[in-house]
Image (cartoon, rainbow, N blue to C red; front, side):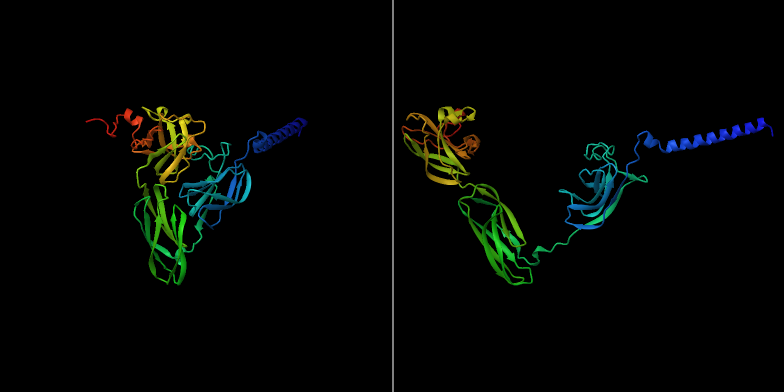
Length: 392
């Protein structure tokens, strides 16, 4: 073999070796490309949820790992029930997810979602799946399924008397005695006494001890004086240790609200008052208090107020004039019935009857009481001295 031939062979071998080196180097570069060019690997996650018994409002995630942070979404049959708070990247053990609206029981699926918006706020549903998509493993969402049940609760009537029925009128007035009849039964296997409570709007008004044999029932009658009760819709209830019945009834004020001036002097006036709510009587300058648009009382128009009055009828209510008030005998004044606190006039509001404020006008000079409802305001609106509209 000649020297030329040998040299050619060596060149070919070197060329082959160089080519192999280039291919290997290219492979290494391709394999390291994500790291070299700053491209992260696909996000990863895992989750484990075991079957559990809860109170029906929580789900406990045994362990969840998220490479980039995100959320755990609990669903049933594809419907989202609750979403966890944002979870930082890393592993979380015994993470509890709680719902205030949905019952978390049954065969539930917990799926791990990314935070693609980087705002720590779950947006998968509201973006129609464009953002905060699930983490994937082999092309499928990372999730786990578990059966969640609630603890068996003891029947409250196993050891309690039962309220079988409640008999009460749907409407009562605030000047009578309300009668409530409840049928109480002992459905247990035990003889003995238990307490029964009568409540108004949850407040215990009366408590009684009943001694019933097993299987025995009886009627219990409760009576309640309504005279100090504010008108309106109220709830009546009768309760045993583990049972109860409720009824809603309407309390109606037993008379029309009114203010009647009975005496006058330079320092004070006296009135008989019927008020359906906590309130007071204010004496105001009638010339400035009423106009064609209705009752319009400025604080400077008030020359005196009564003490606060409870709902009901009150005789000889004294309304003293303020020390700085100047009231002449001929001044036309108005006694206005208010709801609220006399120490907070700005927050008080006139009591109305038949869509009109309860107002009585008078003068100190003669101490004359005008008929309830007869005011300058009503005259300007078309009422005559008899309270009619004047149209024949």
